[in-house]
Length: 241
Image (cartoon, rainbow, N blue to C red; front, side):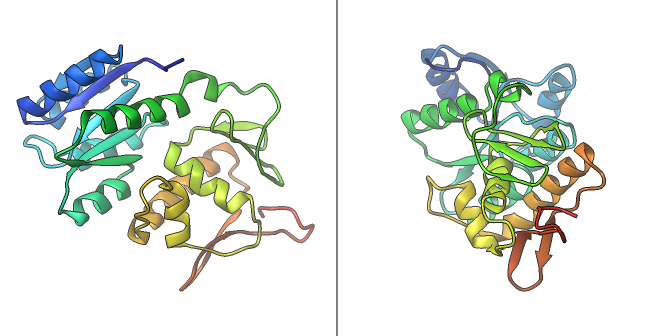
């Protein structure tokens, strides 16, 4: 059963917006179009869509700034960036600003539809349900649920994006083990085989902030300088401080 939703397409090229709209509407989604980040942000302030397909280079607020503003809110709305095939820097910056995935231009509508479907399925409302058993690794007061892409810390739900969930899960499944930035990015994007460690630090910073909001006394993610990150072990052998 496909998870349908409202898709916002933000791109200054009308032909791109029309192509994405047609593909998404064939899948049963509702589509909203915006020609620049400023117009999209004005609409998002009244309520976020279920997913955003976002170009990077646009007038009147580019995609990177729009994504940063979205991530400043406690929201896990998936963001799929559209980037030029030859511009690796665009992809890195998109991930650093909080993007969950990217599709290179020119893109195939089937590929885009598949990525949208996967992102919506992982971010479906059931993933935010606090009740029920957690099916995934647990490390002290941190619990992970692979079926609902849900994390709980000290009993409180932590609103993670798909990328953030995958990275935190990688740390939680091996407390005390150092994970390099490349390994963490590889876990975040297993479909692409394009782990770029430059984006890892930005994702870890956001994960830490969200975990701190759930439990200010928990400080489990440790930086191992020159190597990467690990989920620290307390004196009692549990994860965290």
